[in-house]
Amino acid sequence: MFTRIERKPNKNNKEKNSPSVTAFIGALLTLIGVFFLSYNYIQAEKVYAYDYMSKAYYNGTDVVIISEEEAQEDNDDGLPEEVTDEYIGYLTIPKINLTKGFLDIRSSENNVDKNLLVVNGSNYPDKDKGNLIIAGHSGTGWNSFFNDLYKLKENDTAYVNYKGKKYIYVIKNIYTQPKVGKLAIYRDYSKTTLTLITCTNNDSTTQTVYIAELSNIE
Image (cartoon, rainbow, N blue to C red; front, side):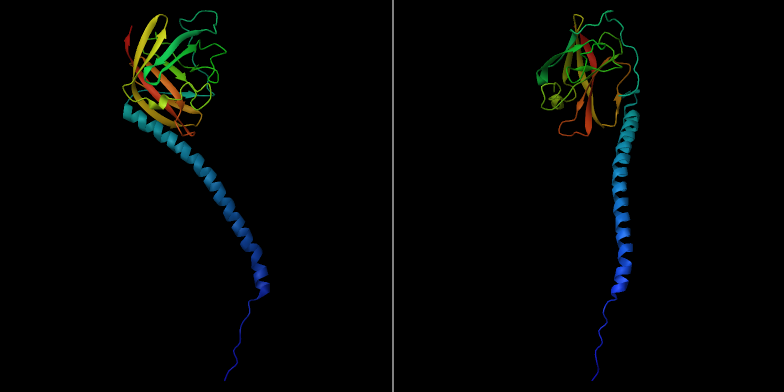
């Protein structure tokens, strides 16, 4: 017969190792947190860069970048010397029953929170090969003038009434981009165009761009 000997864990060793394990776990969690924050930022930049390059190569057309912080060109050609807060033109999109006026680009009321916004860098419809860029809110607020823009498809029409003429545009391209403070506009610079911009339906992280080309003037 023999005597069975049970070995008990050394409590001193457990207590000695415990702080190291805790420190390791803390450092690991910190690294994981930093990784995810960095990953989200890098992914956003990668998506933006990929989107920019792929569309530039695919379309084979010039690309202009609109930045929220960069200065824009002077676009006062043909405007009266005095700034007016009255509508100078109207945007109409029959498919979504939208008719809404837009203002002189220099007006203090040319504000996306109050009206449709004529974006700096725009040209008015009578500028040959120019680009009228209009942005608007979507959502549930009273100022969500572009809430139904997501229903538009290629070949749908939009009209701009400006200085007694009706400019008829046909949508040729629709694409989304991440909200990273800049926006690339992909259009054919040999055409006169209308660009509409709003937040993507049911997606707060991207915005949708609609490129329409002038087809007729009445």
